[in-house]
Amino acid sequence: MKYKHLFGPVNSRRLGVSLGVDMMPYKTCTLDCVYCECGSTSVLTTERKEYIGAEEIISELQEFLSAKPLLDYVTFGGSGEPTLNTALGKCIRFIKNNFPQYKVALLTNGTLFTNPEVQEESLLCDMVLPSVDAISDNVFNQINKPHRSLDNTSILNGLIEFSEKYTGKLMLEVFIIPGINDNPAELTNFKAVLQKINLTRVQLNSLDRPGACDWVEVASAETLRKIAEFFVPLPVEIISRNSSTPILKENTGIATEESILTLLRRRPSTIEELSRITGLTINIIQEYLSELQNKGQVSSENISGNTFYHL
Figure 1 (cartoon, rainbow, N blue to C red):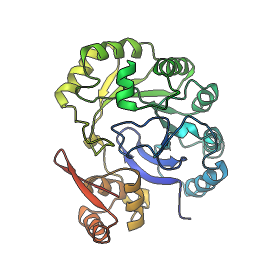
Figure 2: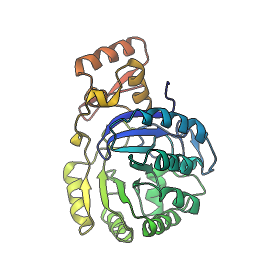
Figure 3: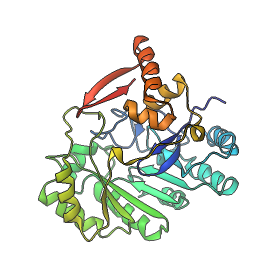
Figure 4: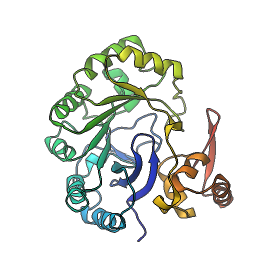
């Protein structure tokens, strides 16, 4: 079967060996974040509906998971906001009922935790990884460019409410953009709100591949370290792109030009990342990329001294 909605397994810095499930049309989201590695949002919406049918996704999961791949997580995420799809709960329950040996993770921007149904569906996951990039309205609007119906205070209250019910791991990402959300006032607001959330860990992140807007800058290691110290006694870690370890080729089954295109369709990647994900040597990846560039299917861009390939 040629998979339309599954990608990987990929070697994730936050989730280990992760099979991605993309259950949304490309860049359909509640936010239009300036740092998004998938690019600008095409459809900005808060409407929940079955964008891609549950049976279509379940069919792919059934075939892939029946082969008993070595995975740390099956992760609902991808190139849009997964909680917009009303099929989410049904797909999670399918895995829990039919492949209970696999843990389920949810990558979400957290904007729909105001919805009781989204909370109930998300409670089924072993790990939930929401993001909070701003506390004040002006910073929220500048970084996340939300759908006009969204209110950040309500979103944060929804996340707090969800965390009080949730018994799994709640790993909350804060994406730092220098000059925007790293000032003393915003960080003080962050700390006050984060202390109300029953979280497992705060994960500080910054730009490490091209984002939707060129003006977004990389936060220095020193800046992130100081923010981590400021957030104490909250459990904080700084996540970095180079913290992951290789995946063995036999665990992934990815070794084709088409698979490389599938990965790049979802996010820009370096040769080294593609090598780790696919299990192929850097030389072989380079051959694939050169051929794809000659065909005009792939482009490259330098950011912070690293060459990222993208469609």
